Amino acid sequence: MRFAHLTNALEALGLRSGQVVLVHSSLSSLGHIDGGAGAVVSALRGALGPDGTLVVPTGTSANSDTSPLHRAAIAGMSAEQVAAYRARMPAYDPATTPTDAMGRIPEHVRTLAKAQRSAHPQTSFAAVGPLAAKIVDGHARDCLLGERSPLAKLYDVGATVLLLGVGYDKCTAFHLAEYRYTKRPPRRTYRAVVDDGAGRTWCAFEDVALDDSDFAVVGASFERTGAVRVGRVGRARARLFSLPDAVDHAARWFAAHRPARSG
Image 1 (spheres, rainbow, N blue to C red):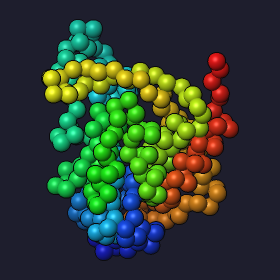
Image 2: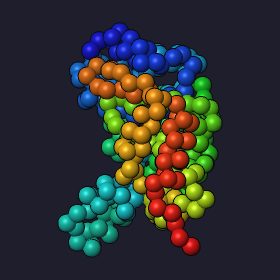
Image 3: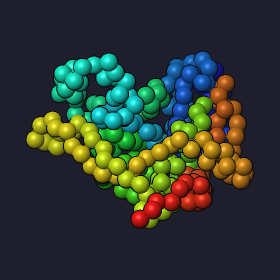
C-alpha cells in the first residue's frame, strides 16, 4: 500500500487535523506498506496535522514477576535460575527501554526525536505533538491505568481511539473504566524493577487488579450503540471512536456485569 492511499484511508475513516488520538495497532494486519511502521506513523501524523497529538501504549509488562511475559521467560527454570534472571533484569528507563509486545508502530513512535514517554515501569505511554507532555507527565507508579495515568488525561481532553487491525481486547481505554465502575474495585500487588537514582531495585505497589478478559464483549456492546466508525485501512479493519464515550460505556457495562465485591 502506498503512502498516499494510506493517508486517504485514515482520513476517510475520520481522522482529522487537531485531534488527540490513542492508537492501538498491528502493522502486519495492514498488509504490505511501503515504508513500514515509519510510513504508518507519518501518515497518522499527517492526518492529525501540526496541532494534533499521537499517543501510543509503550508498555513493558515483562518488567514484572507475575505477568504472562515474565512467566513465559522463566518457564522451566530452577529456583536458582529464576533468582539469577531476576537479578539481571534491567530497571525501566523511559528514554531507552523498548516496548514489550506492543508492535512496531508504538516502538517507532517511542524512538521519535520529539516523542515523550510516561514514567510508569509497566504501563507507559508515548506521545508526540503539542499535548504530549501534558498527557504523559505525572504518571503515578501506583496508578497503572487510572486517574493519575495518561488515560485520565486523554479522557479529559476528549481524545479519540483508533484500533488499527486489532480488536477491542487491545483497547487500553477500557481499563480506566475499571477504576470508575465501583467505589471499591478489586486490588492486587504489582512489582517492577526501577531506578529512582539510588541504583536498580525491585519495588512493590498496590493498585486495581486489571482484567481485560471481557474487553471484547464490552467492545462489541459499545459498537452496537452506533458510536464507532468502522472501515478498512489496507487489509485491516479499523475502528475510530470517542475515548470518553467508550470509557463511560465500559463503566456502565462493568457495573452491570462484573460481580460486586462483598464486605
